[in-house]
Image (cartoon, rainbow, N blue to C red):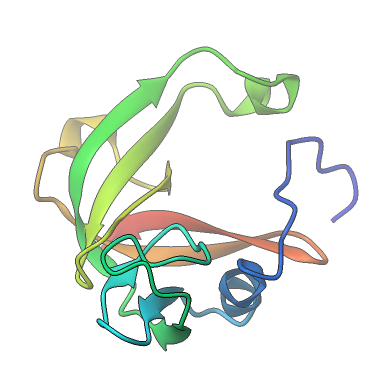
Length: 135
């Protein structure tokens, strides 16, 4: 897994359970321990009730395409070899949106409402990233 030259995230105490879940092949989302609002991206405070009481749930990893973009310009040199690539915004079954790259989806197939599911790409020994594939 050496030679990965793309930008990588820096997990924090608030996001570590998310990254640990991906490494284990499971999408984990935060849920407020008080009002039960599911949220993504991970953060310490509930945007609905401002509680700091957080719990983690295992998500289905399924959803539908909300929107997409086909990227033709690399924002970082490490992505030049991937061009063009598809970034999708997905409405997850749990009621939150998530963005990631699509894999194995022909651009002619893309449409709002297209069923997708999460897949996991281990890009470094200590880093697994989420991607979306056809469901």
